[in-house]
Each structure stands twice: as structure tokens, then as C-alpha cells.
Amino acid sequence: MKRMITGVAVAALAPALAVTMLRSQSKPAADPLSDGAQNVRFVGHHDLQGRQSLQVKTKSDAANGSWAYVGHSPNNRTEPEQPILNPITGKKEWNGTSILDISDPAKPRLVWHIPNDVTGVNSRGVHVVYDYKFNSNPPGRDYLIRSWDTGKEMKFQIFDITTRGTDPSKISLVSEITGTPPNSCGPGCGGTLIERAHKGFWSQESGLFYSASGEPGFRTTIMHIWDLKDPKTPKFVGRAWLRGQKDGEPGFEGQYVHHPIVDERNNRLYIGFRNSGWMGAWDISNPASPKPVWAVDTNPPGRGPHTVSPIVYKEVPNFKGDALPRTYAFVTDEAGGAADMAPCASGVRTKAYMFDITHESHPFSVATWQVPVGNFCDKGGRFGPHQHAELVNSNLNRFEDKIAWIAYFNAGVRVVDLSDPYNLKEVGYYIPKTNANSHPIAKGQKTAIQINDVTIDHRGLAYATDRVGTGLFILEYTRRRTSSSF
Image 1: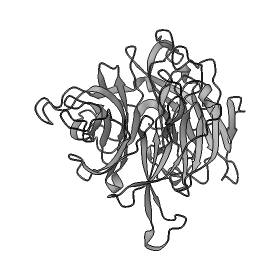
Image 2: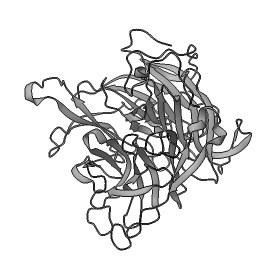
Image 3: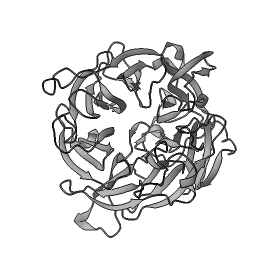
Image 4: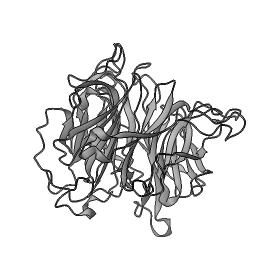
């Protein structure tokens, strides 16, 4: 039997930034964890057992409750990785995927950790679907898909997580995606996944899973589309890539698909290509054969675009009449790693961009934004953006409030006002302190906070993870609030 939320209207759990917040069961904890904040209030924290944490997703509804899911990668300590004790099971476990009850965001509660069975597995990517309408035997199950990548073996694993609130020990592996059909893109093209199994998006509406993954016949990670209507039997559907990625194509610059932003309502797939300046959009009205719509080279890049989010504006300063509405793409680069270079050594710093994509035949840049240098270059670790919150309650973030949350590595979490796409302004930030679980990002480096990913729940709260083991931070932007619900 699924856990119910009592006294809460289903409508209040819509996947949008709620103006009226759901009332917490308890007051938020005091904030001993901040290394600086402005217009952002600490709500809660969980140490995640000190596991290095990457992608975070939240999903809530009236039937299932409120949950957060965190993907982990191997702890990047200077000594060989060791399994971490999980008090829930009493066992030492290799990093995998954590599941937290966030019904009280001031006191998030870890209910289960799905471990990996060997060392060195990167399970950074995670996504979930609830009350899945496509599988009929049995009906209405909840599923989680995660990446599984050792650098030598790559796949995606699908788990039935329906019992997470009643008996999480019964969470079970349902199936695995290990490769595309051989010769499905020409002789010798296709087969067992290679290069990466990175991040993806599982659509609750279509049953399609969009993954960043590599296969024979391509130089780097491309976009794959899978039919998961029956999670027990994944089926390959189609693929998309940027010219130059396929073996033999000219124009290769090292670019690889990082992860997809999927707008099925408008038949668009948006992709940022790391290790180059490229980003672009594909028409997915026929998912078996996505068609390129536009592509832009943002060179000179930092490490290349990471996250590309479409935003529709009904109002834009100095635009009137038939110039409206307009569509823009908010884009964040990913800052380079501190293991191979000082964070400010390059002559080009990573940043966030705003592109006008109203006329898809001619996208163009209208603004850029970045955190001023300050003392971050000497703080340790990476300095620069990694990702912005592209989802709300695991659905596409349409930025109705024109506020962006950005994970900015050693500069913490930044909040940027996008209301004027030509004049992006920071309106808040939160920089956590490291703790006893934190560790250097690489040998010889200082220990510094490395906020990696941020997402938004159904209440408008932000959830941010740290990739050096400091935990999960739950935050609220306060500047536009007239009163607090916590």
C-alpha cells in the first residue's frame, strides 16, 4: 500500500514552483553549515553517509509522498576507495543511489541506499517514474533508473522502488540496458555500450528514456532513445548526434553529449556538448529518427555547454506587439576540473549564457553571466558553474518565476534573476561549509565545497549535492517570499 500525504490537496503538488509552500512538520534547523549566504535560507541537511554525490532528483505526489533520489560516484579520496558503513543494513556498501523521505524538508530521512556490488562504479545519473501507466503486470508500479559506469563496462539499471516507503529491502532490479542492436547504424555500428553511460531523462508521459551513452561506430557519447513502456524489456528506438561524432564524419572536436533536456510537449530535445562549444536542438516528433533543428558553437568555451533549458517569455523589456512571445535558451557551461589545472588558470572562464531561439533558423546570444572571481580562485577545487536546475519535481523546469538556481562548485549555489534575458542579475547565493566527511577533489588539492547539482521540489525548495562528500543541502530563496511556511 502506498504512503499517503494527509491534509494536502493534490493540486498543491503540481510540478511548478509553488507560491504557497507546504507547511513543514517541524521548524528548520539552525544554520551552522553556511560559509556565506544572501537571500537564501537553510532549511535542512543530510550527510548522505559521506558519499560523493552528483545528480539529485525529487518527486512527490499525493499517493506516494515526497522523496529525493541522489546518484553517487566512487569517493574520490587520495587513498583507495573503501566501502562505507550503512547503519540501515549494518553493511559496508559501495556507493550507489540514496533514497530520502523529504516530507519534512527540515529533517530529511535516508530510508535506503541501493549499493553497487563492486568498487569503482559511477552511478551519478538517476531518474524516477511513479504509478507507471504503461506496464500492466503488475500495474501502477514506481521505477528508478540509474547509470552504471566503471569506465570499462557501461549500462543503465532499472529498479522497482514501489516499496520504498513500506519495505525498502524489497526494492529489486528489474532489467538492464547494455547496448544497441548491432549493425543498426551501419556495418559494425551499434552494440554493447562503450565510452559512457552518463545521464538521462525518463518521460512519465511517453515511456521513452533519453540517455547520454556511447556505442561502437561513434567517437564519443551520443543521444540514445529507448522504449521503457515495459521496464522489464527495454527496446531501442533511435539516436541523435552532432555531425563529427560518428566514425568517418569530418568536424570532430572532442564533443560528447552530456545529458538531455526533453520538451516532449513541443517535440524538442536540447543537448549541450562537453569538450567543445556546441549545443543544439532536435525535433523528436519521430523519436526513431530525431532531426537536427539548430546548432550553435559557443566558442571559446570553458569545457562546453552542460545544461540547455528552453524558456518562453510573454513579456520582455523593450519588446512589444508581434515581437512577443519570445523563446530563449538558458545555458550553463561546466567548469574544468582542479585535478589538471588551477580553476582560474585558463584565459577563458566558464559562464552562463542566454540565447534567443525564437527563430530557430537563427539563434543568437543576448547575455552572459558569471560569479566575480573574489577569493574563489584560491579556495581549492573547481570554480565555475556545473549545472542549473532544469527540473521541478522531476518535470521540465519552465521557469515561470524566471529564477535560476545554479550549482557553482566552490562558489556554492547561486540564484539568478532571468526576468530580463538581456540583463541577468544575481539575487542570492548560499555557500556551504565543508565538514568531517569532505575530502579533496584530487591529491594535493585543498578541501573545498564542490556543489555539483541542484534541483527543485514541488514546494519551490532547492536541493543541492556536494561531490566531495559534504551531503545534501535543502534551501529556500526568500527575497520574493512575503511569509515563510517553515
